[in-house]
Image 1: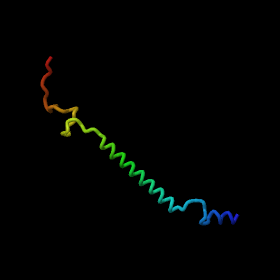
Image 2: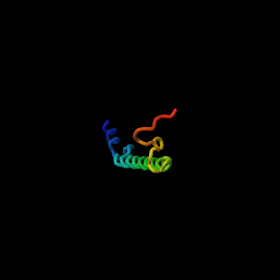
Image 3: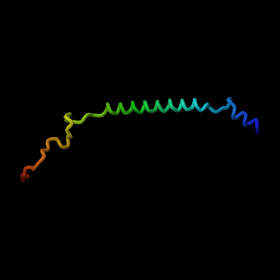
Image 4: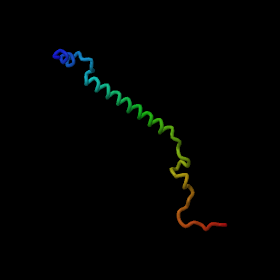
Length: 73
């Protein structure tokens, strides 16, 4: 039993060094964030601009505020 502990706790353990795995995990996280930012940028560039380039909402373009003229039948 004492020998098993010595092998598991030794530096020749089959498990990876925690600092190496932390660095690897951090690199993977950073790469994921870069890819995500690139996808966001690509979507932003692909969006079609609104009609009426002046920033006016096309649904309410031409509507005059205030009292409206009576309906003609």
